Image (tube, rainbow, N blue to C red; front, side):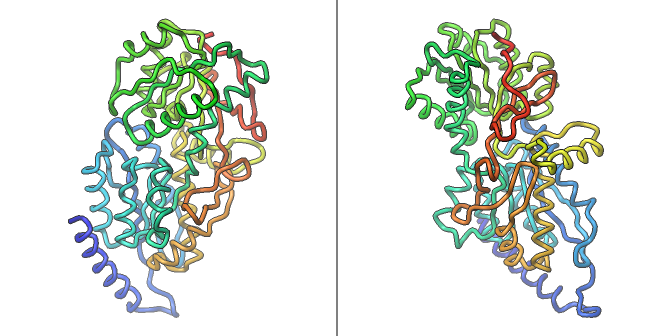
Length: 412
């Protein structure tokens, strides 16, 4: 039913493009038009802190000057709790607007099923999360998905590099691993679950013992005490929680610190969101997390500081990962429009998106043509490890970009 509806949209879109092409031309140039850019964002619901970041970053659209006689306007579809029904509703509404020529998101459905809607509607689309799901959709049928590109590289590094990072710390004498024990807690959603499953395989393959393996239902979690009681029965050397919602992660940390164990605490993604430090205050000191596609603030990448400073000057707050990422997505699209010459020529815009090769806040952005994911690695977009101290996020790995070293954990 959704596909039939989108085909109808396509017919209307084709008529629009034909009308624009046949419209009055002045000196061989089409008259000015307002090009709408559609943002899928969780403005309400448990991920609303990220949704606010999406919108702030993408508002660069409204500040942009014209390109080829066109001006740009942001329109937003609220995916709310990211359920399939709410994502589908937001996608349909934006695709139904004949003036929308590009769509973007940090994340919408987490399973990324909306990629099929974009392909059916011939809509250029850029996203930045759950890249494993993106790869699984696109790689088997590349010709079908010329539409869609991921600013986030492969999540394989999330699955493997935490183990490598911790063992590297031991080799350097920074921490001691007498027993190689780890507790892994996750949330039942595509992002958190796929990462925790990958971590468990990697830790097990390297001889670690998993002392706690727990998963909570997706959504708001305010009480972690029953799980933490299991953690304390046999205190592990590393405690990991891959629930990405900042409020959940903050309550986990606050309750862990009621009776802390001498463990390195690793939280997935959530500490990168400004809300996390607001909710935890000084208790967040010492927390370690990693990011793929996070801002690489280093003298070797001046672009990151440039964009972060612009964001802070405009909104009076530090940006999280997604504010800067969506800002960059908008500018990648503008580059593609300039190259294509016409925002309504979706085929040319999609081709130009795929040919992107530029320095962004997260490193060098270049896409893998076999997966449509950003390339990952120290020479492209690296996986970074950060530690929070005094409300600041200090880059501690990789060595090529590190500005600090790991300090003693708050729970030690």
